[in-house]
Image 1 (cartoon, one colour):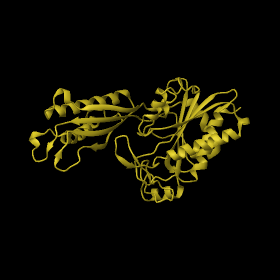
Image 2 (cartoon, rainbow, N blue to C red; image 1 turned 30 degrees about the vertical axis):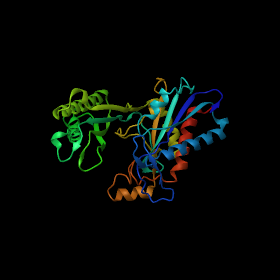
Image 3 (cartoon, rainbow, N blue to C red; image 1 turned 60 degrees about the vertical axis):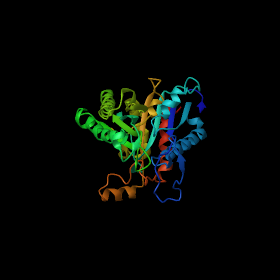
Image 4 (cartoon, rainbow, N blue to C red; image 1 turned 90 degrees about the vertical axis):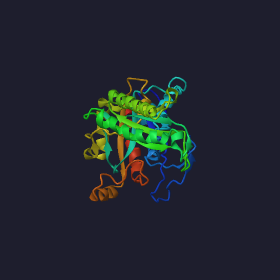
Length: 356
């Protein structure tokens, strides 16, 4: 959206869903099922609030279009796919976002994300706010056979099972205790029948970290464990496990000058007490900041917007729960009051950056 002279602001809304079956019971609950790229059919739903993100962006765009006398410059709106895979932003940049498709170079970059805290609260803090992440697929190769004669086979299911338990030792016994590291195995896929030893087993791994050294420690540890287990079970050098690095994002760091500038209009909109400025970094991850990353001078502001009904949140706290639901949970619900409020937040932030 070009509107004369001024700065260039880029605003991103991610738009992909999760492979989660919605259990909210709402009239609008997703019943969609899709066939994934690996051939597996799965239910999908917006259990991380990305539908709200897109709605906020569309609402903000309408406000900006109807109030062009109030701002000047260029506003770039990004609908980003594949955030959950941590591949979408990198794919857009690699596809020529700036070089082939001539997206204007941003001076400022803004993104909002839902958070299961009360509607009316926004978390905005400078510095490192989210961990870096890797998505890794490991395939153990074996020799298939009959379940009754395992000595004639080389069982990749056993190799994968041992690997999953040994991976945890990387965090507990190799990464320094004062460093943050998370290693999660989200899926093991192997075989079909009870009495058939398959010839492959797939292990899907997710890493979280805040330093390059911790990342490298976990990756090299995974590789060593994979190869050590495969050799223990007699696999030859040409049948070592494959390790595919699918998606990577570095830690997300907010620029202090930009955050400080935006906290003031947020406080005017929401009240000083509803702008949370002090909180620890999350081990959740994002790839939004990869979009402006080719341009070092672009300032980044990434904020979390509360979307939980305040009464529902209060009831959860009374039960001893930290939050009423988590992201990626089948019962993730965006309070409808958070839709106009999130739109206002987005508009206030962008107008602050582009006001005449």
